[in-house]
Length: 478
Image (spheres, rainbow, N blue to C red):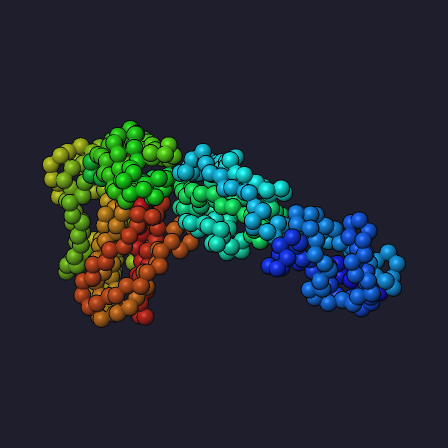
């Protein structure tokens, strides 16, 4: 069988022997079961009748020559394999190569930009070329070269900052090396070349995209909007003294990495744009529409209590705009509400108004009341909810939650007749998808719990608190 050819397992190893500097030693390794002959590209027979093995010495070849060895099976016709190598110079005294100076078109690379390296002043030996290596070593010398497997990103005279090879936020280095090509790695210098020379090393900062993060706040009492923003990415992440130059609709100036700028108040219905550019010319931009409506009713208080005659619900407003009437609805499960009263509003007013309603048909246990407000044009808003418990109860009650609608933070007031301990707080959207799941601690008496809601989209949610003995729920509007 043509075993060596079937496996294509012929490899070559060549190098200087350290004694005879005029020649270059070549060895081969292969597997096989027969006897074999080794010839060169000129038909010269170097070995014959040999058996397979590792590191079989073929012979010494002239420095700087190119050789091609053919191994043929002595027992099987047409069974041959070829392998080639370039012989490097083994006598350092004959080297007249000199390193050149590498230059790049830019050292700080914006996303999508290309760095181009060039070193055209190397003095090279025959068969040598200049190789550009992108790596992670700040310093490169002939005695300390970047390891191909662990320290080299890529080779070539140009590289795009697109994150595919070098991640953004990385300082990489490019070095020019004059040498012959490695026999095993295409496009990589042969580190065994005794005439190898190393040019200078230049750091390249691969900048991340400039991003603008905002935190927004809507004052529903005034309908005015404010926001704060921070900027990241670009040159300031590498150079502490660098800043971003900001232009936009409501702020123009400079901002440092990690600094927060607050802007506002701004009227509802407008939009704002933030443009950021660093000292290297990298750019980032953000545009958002402002949606911040003033609530038609500015609620001062909403409270409820159990009396002998029924559940008494009282509320006060500081101001009203085009307020036609209030609707009070009741629920015993926090989900299904039934209208129990309609109370006339006061139109448009800037003075305090007080309202109340006695629910004489209130059931025993806990009842949740929803206060809804309707304008003259039919538009509606829900200023808030309140819970009232009639009779003795050791259960769980969500007595209040505010503000309505919620913005950045929801405050829950929970009343418990017993020491509950660890409980779960879950919030779902109208499709039933869980958007929040927390573990909370509930003690005997009044508990005030704050829940972050800035990440929620506008809409209606159902909040549920579950203990080992009870489950209570309430509607949340964002």
